Image 1 (cartoon, rainbow, N blue to C red):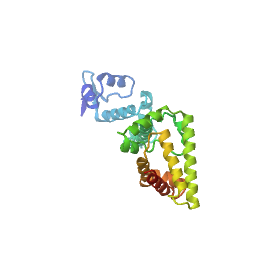
Image 2 (image 1 turned 30 degrees about the vertical axis):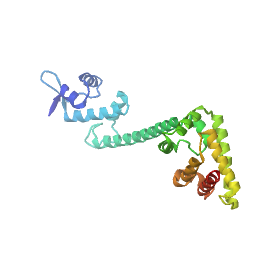
Image 3 (image 1 turned 60 degrees about the vertical axis):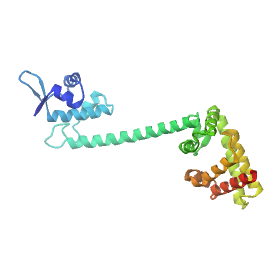
Image 4 (image 1 turned 120 degrees about the vertical axis):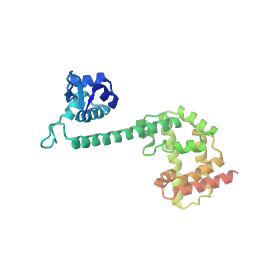
Length: 261
């Protein structure tokens, strides 16, 4: 069976002008002509057109598409170059798989950029790595927004974060790391979480949040402490500093909140 140029244009969603151009450059020449000399496309021509459009969708220029379709490598005995359907399918699958992976990485990068924007952290990726190291401040953005997105504290934290420079973040990170190291030191020494020195460090942690992020009442601070244990992402951050630190932090924060009340 054969088809007119208009029919093929309708099947493929391209213009007649495009099919004429493909014919003129030898990319897709119809296998037959009518008695009046009009182009008539065969099923084999439609198969080739499908491959042309596939490679074009992947961004290949027309000259490279022609080379791919007419590549003699892998053509089985008895077939002309470019006539190995299985070979083209394998190539298409490989190209699609690669493109899917690239698009997945691009989507992830865009999602992380969106999260960073929500958090108001206006640092480049290089600056974030320099400041935070292996810890990713964007990782908890979605959870934080879900919990507090409609609160004044959330709005305040975004305003504050948007104003900070790379040097500010480096100073804050070092200060927080210092608090964590001292609390971990108390844990290592066996000091109870409700001992005055542990509660004092919990209060310092509370004050740091209020000063650099948002006004954090002791009740909110206590709920943060609960999240440090309940949320595996936060727990992993503290457990990496010292095993048992997530629970110790929570207990010290809870004791300090009770003392403040």
